[in-house]
Length: 465
Ligand SMILES: Cc1ncc(COP(=O)(O)O)c(C=O)c1O
Image 1 (cartoon, helix red, strand yellow):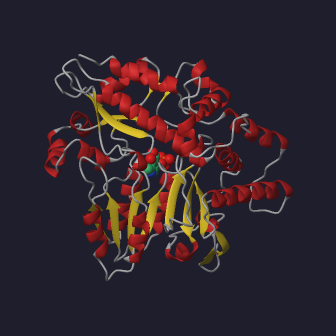
Image 2 (image 1 turned 120 degrees about the vertical axis):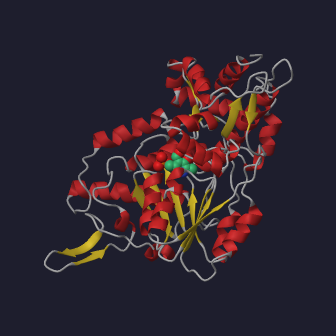
Image 3 (image 1 turned 45 degrees about the vertical axis):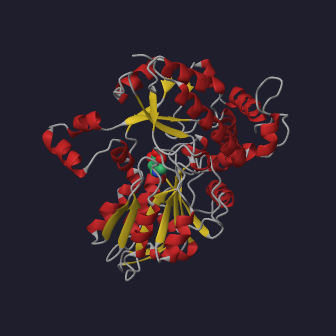
């Protein structure tokens, strides 16, 4: 496990005091640069600048070593049996499950292992009782949350979107309050929002979980973009359902996520079928089956029993660094990047990049969304920006990031524009690419100053053009 002879993590105040050390580096800089050398040396070896942590985190080399050791030294069989190799798989799976519950302080939840956050969200879509129900989505949701609306509408439930304010990209709290006050007669109402936007990086107000519940709503909190760099304490934020993907938190393995379901809401989810592993009894002679009474009910078929133990390794790794230390590091890197970007101007004083959304430190994760402008203020096509970045081995992401709500707001599009775009072209994607899209840059635990400098150099190359 990562072990550097550094002082224990200090409070923010103390870190600020030590910022001007003789090397001119803060304690956090020194810590994370050492971490980079030890765990992520492949970035420097291959001369890659990775700035897409919201897309996917990077694994530390020690995670791989520990997982490999585990696989080398043990024999694992398919779980759900008492034979010794099966038993071993079951033990490690349950240890990983307990680790997730401990990490998120989630003793009142079932932890259901899934393939990713989208698969977790699909369970909610399939199983939430939308008949005569209501779905309220924040306009800043990932498509894997937006897609729940299809399940809702197909079962006759009502649908509404809560607006996002422009230019702050925060939730419009008055509208949200009004929308949550409606449908008092209904008992199955689901409000879904992301703890952190995957596009703007804005951390939405988690007080809305309790406020919505007080008005009779169940709350699905999508923590996919939030959990990698912020503490999520489910004793404090008691969302009914929580979705996430593990590769976003610690990079390895891919193909695993979880759905956390509050135990008192578990039976509200109606599973429309059964599969191997989800039932305690099935009869063929009699058309009867009994579903398992806990997490197994939603884990269809053979679980990913070879990779699941790597979740515990990954969470131990994050704990070793400290989630609060990660939050602070991300906050510092992001604020530094914002400041530097705002200082890069064309000779006529116009900014080279236009950052979207509130940049307020307390509510901002490590994701920045922006457009590049020429000296006349016209946007560069994001596809061109990405291609130029690719040439410098800089990994950024462009497009609309599976979050059409925010993209439509940032691109000032109306419903009419969307309809026109769809109807006027044989290739709606092409039409949309002309109207929509932006550039996303995100920092993470492996980011060091050199990465920021490389990106800033890249932005400088657009000056006076
Ligand atoms: C906020 C948010 N929700 C959901 C998802 C979907 O995650 P996955 O693609 O791992 O299923 C993502 C992925 O980027 C995300 O950022």
